[in-house]
Length: 76
Image (cartoon, rainbow, N blue to C red; front, side):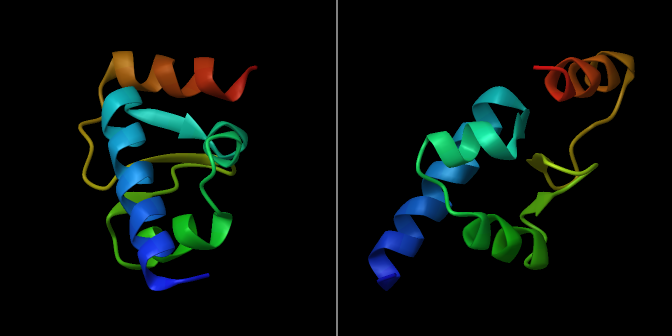
């Protein structure tokens, strides 16, 4: 993968997660985000993986509504 494609995927992944707060891996993959890109973003602490297959912005505020959103996202 070229550096510009990686940057594009990184930007798209961050924008999507900022818009949706929390997303499933399958939804991100469907939008063209490679799991390797997500792993790098987690390693760099840009994103967090609160549970298997879910991604959110690092340092996201966790409240009751967020917890419910996480549960709702886990169930397709």
